[in-house]
Length: 129
View 1 (cartoon, one colour):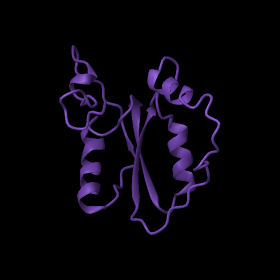
View 2: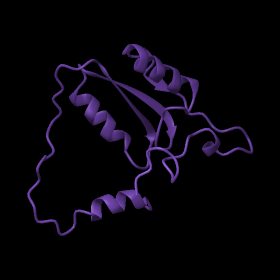
View 3: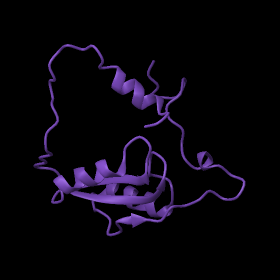
View 4: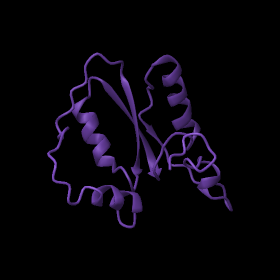
């Protein structure tokens, strides 16, 4: 999380809190749910790939992990390989047969931000102050 302001803010927000933990970490137990589609990129600076692998390992019978072999936080919309399976899953709950998607570089002269939606901003629904 080097340089990740969101990560530092999340961790330091608990400093000095004296209350007991209401929901301590525990092994995953998923019951009565359809197969869950999980997505993660190999080089995500906010949610390391090892976290996704561990969560999937604990819930293999109830989850499918789709790995994007590139960088960045957020997998949906990176390529046809990451977008189509998610769309199909959201409509039908059918999990994809593909488990890995190759990294896609932006066309020369373009940044990836032109292809990945930005987060909530003022005047956009979902913005919280």
